[in-house]
Image (cartoon, rainbow, N blue to C red; front, side, top):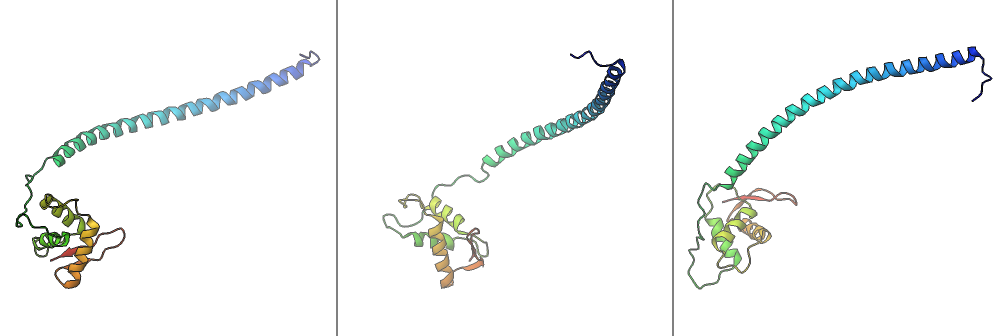
Length: 161
């Protein structure tokens, strides 16, 4: 270190350092208060959100249990067709469509599920909803059913008897 500094220069440098550290201490006290306020705010919000989360999780678990329970007992296949005969998929689809309520809307996914449920013993593979959609369009074209909502690439067509 250099000892060639005068006493006045040393005092000036020390005063500058003292002022700098006072400003920094003051600044950090302000930040500390701000951080304490923010911490208290976020802790209170965390407690509120945790309480609601736990309540929702409990309710969701109960709702999931209710959703799993079946209100309607599962029926076996309702295959009232003559035994031993083979039927085309379009005839099976037509039979399910004829059993739909008058005026009640349906789509290809619902009809495919019903065909697969009722005629699963007669089918080698489950009926695909695309096959059902094609058959429903043909039935629409012949006037057997009417189209309520036109289908698009992301939205199934809705039909009614």
